Length: 238
Image 1 (cartoon, helix red, strand yellow):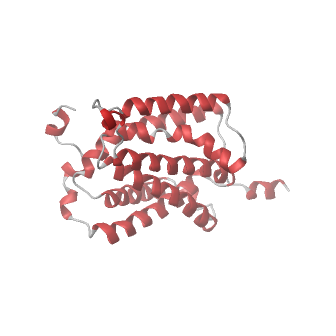
Image 2: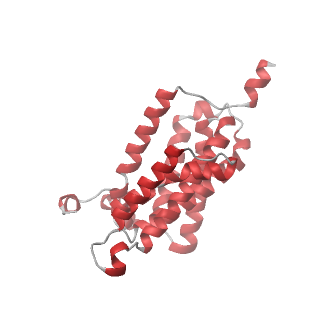
Image 3: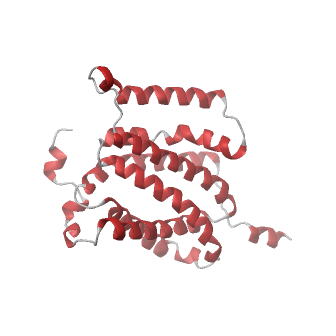
């Protein structure tokens, strides 16, 4: 019976302190990428950029975790991986389309509102009402969005929110949905294998979208300046 119970769930668990450190590191890596993404978008179409990111992640994960992955029944990860990939893909599509027409700072701020959205998405799934702390956090975040949105002009421009900002907020909703689904689905699956399945589907979605809407790839993207900011860009005032 014990063996059967172990086979029914491939998930892993960590202590709360370790989980918090992992989330902190994830936030630091996540936040540091906005400015670089803005630069790469000037040289490479959005979906091709994300295709190469996802494909590289899949290849790296497959190599690093191959001994672990070979012991897992990967076939059962196809559908859960697709579900997560759809929300992740939509989140990035809207966020990066927003980044095309708004600044990295505003894009970062509006994307981070997914943290406030999560309790309300959970509410929609579980009917579990958010606590007063969640409501206070939502108010503070909304107030911050208002401050960031002030353009300094008069009249209607005073509270102007650009099309890029709106796209970014929609992307934040899909990131919140993705995080909630990870919480629900991930309990019964191995985290590495589930992430790999999600990234495989994301690579396929971004690749298909790139071919259909952005044409074929270009050799010019292989230049180092397409992937790393030039010295002139680094020294430019921002």
